[in-house]
Length: 486
Ligand code: FAD
Image (cartoon, rainbow, N blue to C red; front, side):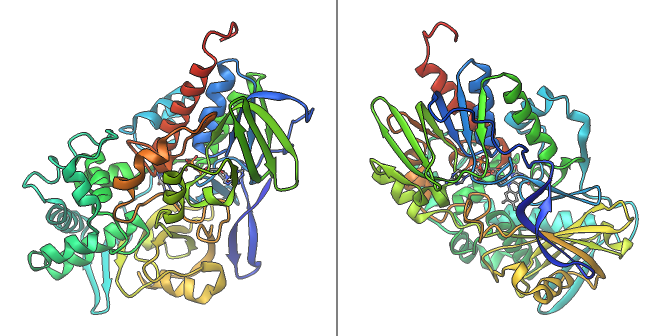
C-alpha cells in the first residue's frame, strides 16, 4: 500500500509524493455503528496511541482509535521501496531503553535488528567539512574528538553532568536542572569557547544540532544534558542509544505488531484518514468531531497527538492555560532528514559533519540497498533550514557537501510541513520544561494527555512514546477499576 506521506525522487520518475509502506491500514476503518459509546477513544496512532489502544483493548475496554493519516506509526514509519526500508522518522532503538526493549522482546524481534554502520571496507573515514575545507580522520580519531568535545560541553560539575541529572527518568527538575534549562547551548558554548579547539567546537555544535534540530540559541542546555545522562554520560553511549541499531524490516514492521495485537483482542475499532477537529468534554464523557463532521462518544479519551499540533484542535472547554501556553511555544525541532541511494560503494563506511555552512550537517553510510548501492542518511534542522522537495538541486548539493556522490534516488518526509506533526521529535527551547513539563503531563477531566513529547525518561524517543502509552492505559484502566470484566 502507498501512503500519502513522504517523497521519493529518481531521474526516471522525477519527484513523487507518497511512498509505499507496510504501515498503511486497509481497510481504513472497521467502524460499524456511529451510535456506539466507547469506553475510551484514543486519538493518534503513533507508538504512544498504539500502545495505549492495545493495552486498553487487551484489558477488556471497548476502544476506538482515531488517526488523521492513512497509516500507523506517526513520526516513526518506514517506506519500503524496491524491497528496502527507508526510515522516514524515528529509526534507532537500543536494549538500554527499557520500554522499547520490553516490546521488542514481547514480539520476539530481538534478532531483527541490524547495525547502521559498516566500517569493514571502502573509505572508512570521518570527513569533517567546514568553510576552511575538508579534514579526514579515522573513526577512532573521530570518537576521541567527539568524546573530548562533548565532555567539555557537559562538564559543568567536574563529573560530566552526573550531579545535574543524577536520575534521568525523574520528573522533578532540581533547582540546578532548572538553571540549566533556562540556559541555551549557545550560552554554554560562550562560557567554554576558549577551552575548545576549533575542531572540538565544530563537532560539539554539530552534534548538539543533530540532537535538537533547532539552533544553538533555541536548544535547552538542560535537555542536552538529559540526553547525555540517559546515554550513560558518554559519547560511546550516545552512539549506542541514538544512532546504531535499527530494524532490518523498518519501523513499520514493529508498529504493525502493536496494531495487530490490539485488533486480535476483538475490542478495537479504528478509523484512519480521520483528523479530529473538535473535542468536547464534561463530567460524563467526551464527544469527538472529525473534520468531516463525524462524531464519536466515549467515557474517556487518550489524546496522543504531538505538542506542536495540540492547538489545531478545538477543545471545549479550552485547554488548561499551562498546556495551551506550552503548545503555543511548541518545541523547536525542525529536523530535515534525507536518504540518498548512491552508486559510490566506498562511501558505505563514511561518517561526516558538514558545518556550519551546509544545509545538512551530519551524515553517514546507513545501509546497502538490494541493488548493491550505498544508502546514506543525512540530517539538517533549523540551522540553514530548507524544504527538500522545493529545490532538489539544493538537496543534492547539501548531500554532496559531505563528499562527492552519484545520487540515484532521494527519499524523505518533510516534517516541518507535516500538518499532523509540525516538526520532528520534541526538543525544547530554554525554559519550556522548567515552566511547563507538569502542565503538559496533567490530566483534564476525562482526558489523559499522553505523548513522547512529555515523557519522563526517553522523552522525544520511541521509548518515551511507549512509556506514555503505557501510563495512559493504566490511568484509564484505573478509572474503570471495579467494573466486572476488568
Ligand atoms: P506521534 O508519532 O507524532 O503520533 C501522534 C499521532 O497523532 C500521529 O500519527 C498523528 O498523525 C496523529 N494526529 C495528529 N493530529 C491529529 C488529529 N487532529 N486527529 C487525529 N490524529 C492526529 N525516536 C527514536 O527512538 N529513535 C530515533 O532514531 C528517532 N529518530 C527520529 C527521526 C525523525 C526524523 C523524527 C521525526 C522522529 C525521530 N524519533 C526517534 C522520535 C520518535 O519518532 C517520536 O518521539 C515518536 O515516534 C513519537 O510518538 P508519539 O506516538 O508520541 O507521537
